[in-house]
Amino acid sequence: CTSDADCHGVTKCCPSKCGYTCQEPVLDFCYLPSVCGNCKALFRRFFFNASSQQCEEFIYGGCGGNRNNFETKKECFQAC
Image 1 (cartoon, one colour):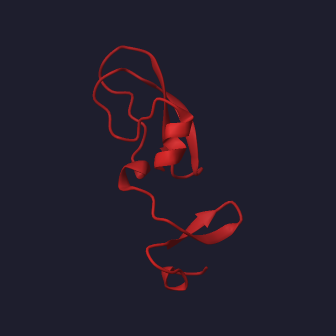
Image 2 (cartoon, helix red, strand yellow):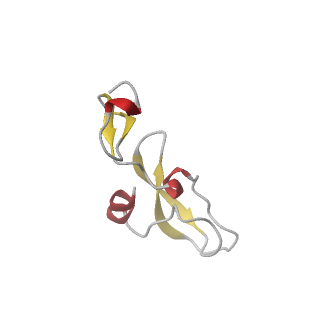
């Protein structure tokens, strides 16, 4: 695709590993940055990195943050 007009239904023209393809739109929270929060715990979590189109690990402090915060990589990929 070259624009959203090339796509059908609710799909959008999005960058992918092989150029641009029509894809289901990603939820808005998937574009939020990883936020460690303001507590001092050291939880291993995953966030969707919109630039790399990958779910990546980060350390979460246990409180605060945003919805781009998943306990497993699988949960991250399923949501985003």
